[in-house]
Length: 261
Image (cartoon, rainbow, N blue to C red):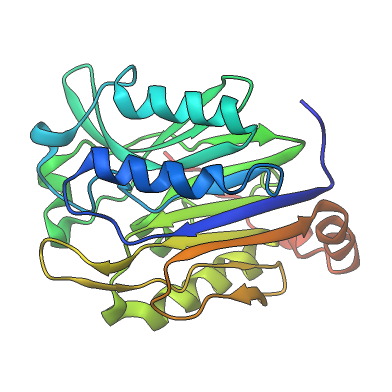
């Protein structure tokens, strides 16, 4: 795989159709096919095939099911890596799983560690127990899902991450918290942070305002969306710029060592 100092990332901020995987795949397929040659990686919101439903037994798919196979085919056709979370059934267990596929046919996945118990997620899904950091085009990318962002020890960069991706269904009622936490994880870890959120209203009547954005290691938004806007936003981030800042301001040298058990 080609190593890219400058990586083009597209955040697909979409309004998800409640519990309708087929229609959501059609909508995403259309968006990504417009991006051929314009981006290296497209990130989709959390539970992008269904919205944030707790009906795991009704909508969870196997890893060789329609959505993962569609993701692989679309990635290979467009030459774009694609990632986002969906409901997966694996060995009789249900997961909110971040699936990341590449044009070369590679599949990576991360199971959500911090299930949103307030919303009943811990009653419907199995908790993940492993971090996932992949190497894509020379970038070390850590995959996280929504509520994980509130737990900084789990998200800690121990000299193994350049970009953190948080795919989310983050309600508009807590929008300021979302924006603050994105900046906090970027500053404390000296990484780029990409946060992709949905918009619209789900089947439970919860509103989502979007505010998908990428934050640099200084805590600055590279570019922000227009609130409540459907569409895609493409950003170009620089590994050289990130590493130059780490050399200039080497916070990581003074970090404590934590053991996650």
